[in-house]
Length: 150
Image (cartoon, one colour):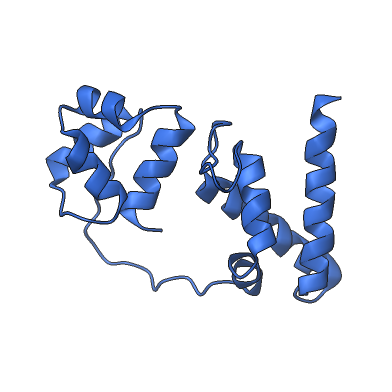
């Protein structure tokens, strides 16, 4: 996940505007907007101020790293599905067009939970879920979500 997407998701999950975060972080609106759009090279100090303004903690780590995790078949299945994107937006609390995350959870967090649930489904099935399995699973999630207000 890119820095800009993380910043935008956290800001929207907190129900904040770029302007309100800029005031709290002591940074300019264009600077933050550029970061959210994948432009600019922020300093560690600026990232720390942004993290604090967003109620988060900045972690910087230098050291031996593990090899990057190979994406699971379930993660690839979810990332290739427009319907999964719509359900992720729904669960994050907004429409895909509105950017989601109004319900307090970022799309990234919802997507991780969806992939984890599909990983569990794979273990139950003894095989990787298919596109049809994903569709049925998303139907179940939407049905469960629509029943929350009852």
